[in-house]
Length: 102
Image (cartoon, rainbow, N blue to C red; front, side, top):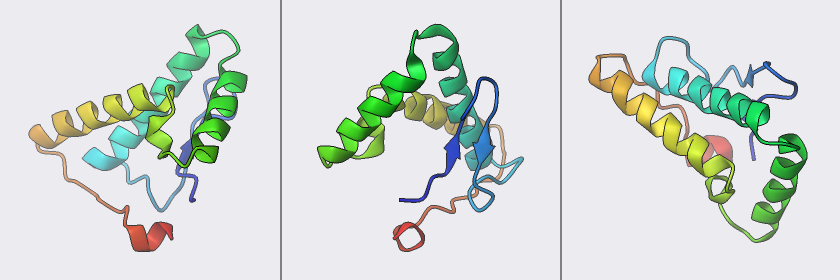
């Protein structure tokens, strides 16, 4: 699995350059997704440890990453931001393909 984004320390977002395209609906929605995790880190005690444990459990169970209880709301927020930006006329940049991720 390709790691597309992360926030390894408070307030820091790292985005994979092949997936983040600034100014596009998809790119800015990805950034919004990671900003959601920064918010989670700020308000949920022990978030990094809890997130990591749930990510392991999700993967071990053979579930998709967005089925992690901490990922689900971040993905939902990402989708809302993308839909809003597309509606406002921002270009889309769909770079995620199964072939690329394989």
